[in-house]
Image 1 (cartoon, rainbow, N blue to C red):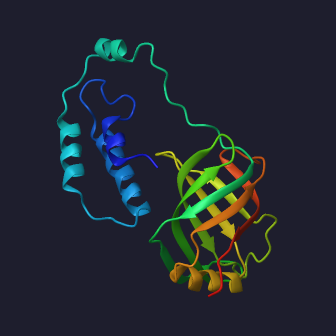
Image 2: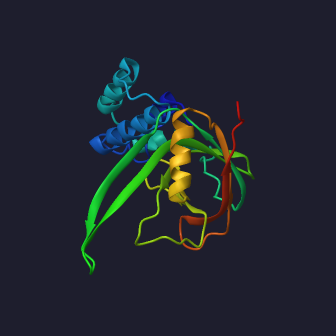
Image 3: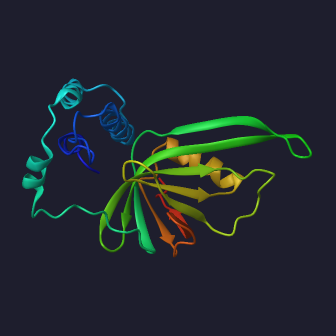
Amino acid sequence: MAKQTDILRDPPSGAHKGKQSLASVGERLAFIFDVRTASGSTEASPFLDRQILKASVRPAMPEEDMARRTRGKDEFKLPPVVPGEWKGEIYGGGSVNLGQVVQPGPPRQSVEFSYMVIPASLLMPSPKFRWPGIVMIMTPTPMKTEYTDAGSLFANAGPPSLSLSLNVTRGQFSDLLRLLEAQRFKEFHFTVEDAERANAWPVRSWGMATRLN
């Protein structure tokens, strides 16, 4: 995962054209929040606050100076997501959400929703590249009890990251919740297949394991 100071040091593209827009500062704030969330902490950092303030009032750099400084330098490009055997590492924190919501139908019915969101890093097989991301695990509902895939991998808009959705049974969800709360799981694996649509890849299988005490 990128260091927080790296993000602040490298502003979003177009930030130096004229006066820096508030949107570019907002992008920094959003990404910093994502990084803090993934690390299990959302506390404010005085150092980061000072850096954000400096970025918001930094004078504009003339376009010709910017072009001169970047001439001959290769732009960093993220590798494409590839199918294969991936690995994941679970970070601390996360959240569990439970509730009911009415579906208009017909027939009208109230349906439960139970899901957990876990910050994680996702390691791609080749090239070896570790993506920041989240894992979302949701229980099946009466309206959808069968799945053709074991899950799905999605590319997120905005800061580069991935979301992994894993399909489970109601019993698996209860077992996972208990074991994750006890911090018995740290690593997991999953198999990604070829993309069926833009920025979405089906997951053929996934698994987590822990030792018995």
